[in-house]
Image 1: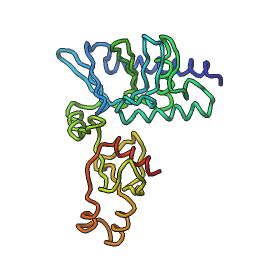
Image 2: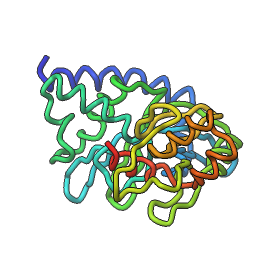
Image 3: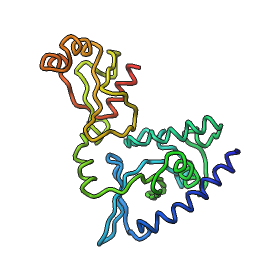
Image 4: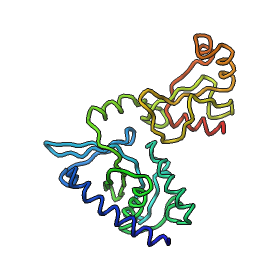
Length: 245
């Protein structure tokens, strides 16, 4: 199927779905919005009511330059789940759809919704939303409604990184760094933007720590003393992981 036809079908599907979403959550009747990149939450609110959603950032469209940028290519964004939009890029590579594989390109007033429609079809969501600030349109896939208490819990578990700002926490041994390869052992296989179970954290240690862990029959006082685990943000974590790949 040619890209234009595929895009038209995706837009039609989203339009039908979005009408029900807007009615169910009454999203047109909130006066204000606020989104938090660190917690990837969107708040819609008026004087006497509010609603919260978890989101995946799809991309941005500049009204000044008439250009689109996919969120996975936006180095200024700290949103971990932006990497879920790489699923769209992978689909575009299979189908040879350049608009889904190029990081940024020229567009028009319909580009943002067109690409959000495609992301909606490939990734899935309960609805979509757009905010506009300083001539920049930002598009979201809304994945679930959450409570204010859940938002506060998410934000309370973030750490402040001096380089990357507020992000999810990760744990590494004292020997891991982004300048040299030391081996990279993980508690479980990870990837950028992945969802974690409530009891899980990103955890990694070097090859020497792995030898010590095996020698002492697992993590105990002796192996932990050798590792001297430290706290970093998840972006630091994946930069270190990439150094060791």
